[in-house]
Image (tube, rainbow, N blue to C red):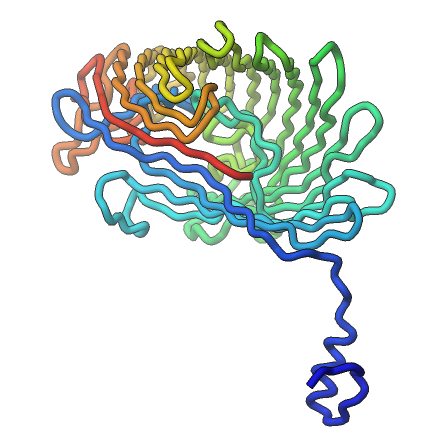
Length: 458
């Protein structure tokens, strides 16, 4: 039977159902087409002398050079879709789950130590949802927010990702303005006995982007202000225990970044950042407020970096490069100076086959002996990789590569292993970068193996 009139039925249940149908708004949408996107890397490797692949990272450094130097299986799988469109107004949904395993077996439980599953993104965007702000994007949820990184060493120097709300890309004539409020949390395990007694850390992010300053060159300016939202009972606890949280519970960071397009067929990015107190995170990225759970972190940090991609011989030889200098000066002497430089030239034999060489150097000058070698120490890493990729270009994926990596450092690799547990401590090398299969007093190491890497979609 074809229904022609919603008022033709008088039975209460049917009337209620049809009434709801008649009152439902008419959505101007077509069929929903899901968007599948993601990233993954996985492989196999060994250390000369025995054992699985060792990954070489300088103790105290926020990052390591990646090529032939990644010891885990890692994946991000995302699903999303545009759910609504009416004229220029659209609403979309995105989600992303990440997986990491030790890359040791066929079946690896994500409950095991070293293996994990994490919800990385779950958010909705509304473009042109606000009258008078054409092109602007309203968003809310948990997301990767305008992340800035150096691909060679996976160093995220401006990363405000997390749950939040914002209004992005407001056209102001000269460039665009974006505003965001993002939250993270930390547990002050040093002072609170219960890890669930967490601190809520809020950051306000303001950015002015796409400012034209020279031919093919644009400027981006940003201010981040973060502070812990400490409950009254937490303040009383700190006061009763004479814990000073007046400076460490807040901080700010300023960023100036210049991007030069058409830079010898690629691009070049220069960034200068300055940050204070609580916004300086423990992993070195200096964003957000979750500073390792410490509300008494006082000090400052500044860094300058230059990175990019250029074609040395068009369509035959290109190169990724990066230079970083960072000075983190903290009142508790846990800071350090970090200098890093690396290059990755790639020669293309065909559209499919290439040879990549990566040379990376990290130098650490710590303020004190806190968790690693108290002397200046450095790591030099050299990798050669034969690659088969889906085209030419340093950022083209998927890629399958065979690699050999050699690293050299000064001093002992690790502290001598605990006779009861067999565990080694960080010294010149970071123990958390992967299996520690070079001897603790070695000064160099060699690894070899194979890896795939892929990214696709959004």
